[in-house]
Length: 379
Image 1 (tube, helix red, strand yellow):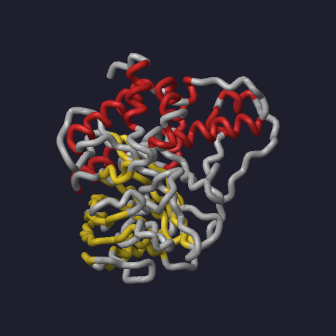
Image 2: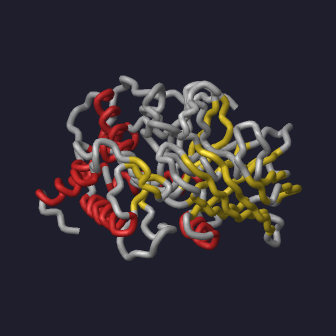
Image 3: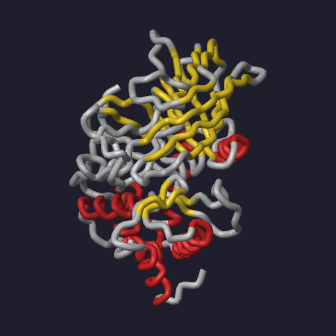
């Protein structure tokens, strides 16, 4: 499958409806070309865990956020970062082929197969965003397992876990749990129930293949850093049986309007400036990931945020703006950083997969705390 996404901000005339609906101005693939490394897709809410999108492999250029301008789409996976450098991270819990929508801890895949083709869906545990730079920051698949079940209507579901390591923050092994459901009966299933790495891009796939008689197939998948039951609970709560992609898209629009766009107003009618403004505002609120209740390392009543990428780039502008637009989330992030210090021994500067890993030019988390202190922020 070839990569075909292209960024666009056009010069069209704006209707009053467009001016009142900022999400209509968002170019969701803004910054995804060249060296931007922005995640090209719709995310259900600010700081959501799941970012379901394409993973592209070219053999020449690393896909930091999954997407490249040219290459082969190898899968669509539920976990990505946005705007990162150094090396790719995540690109895990993958299916192929697909178009999809998602919630905060779960994603929905929708397949429309041609009438004259075999309808197969591959769930690939050993898929991840690879790196060809040879700098020691590439990710690796470690091991994984998958179990297939069926309900009374022979609709399959699958559960399991997989572990990976490394990435730009040089993280030790981390485990992700998953729980997936298909809403059509399957005609055949095959799985390699477990397997160990390391596997490079061309090596054996660890996962499962599902075959269907229906031409239209949907799949709902939840992910958790804690356990399989939590992953199943997320998908049941956020994308229950009978949900449609239109339902999830409408909920995503409501979330972004309520939490971000209703807090700020742009008065210009210049379509290019509005597109740049709202696309940038959208992009800056994709990270970090709010994983409160999903910390596998310690139990705490404090909020928990991960994928802090990275404070040496954010503390001068993005972090202070979040304090204005989302004061509750800002205070939660401050409390999370302090709680990380309590348990890990130092403040996060470039944290991912629950590992601090990187600092640059000292601890820029100190700058964030100093800014909060002079503004009398009370969490």
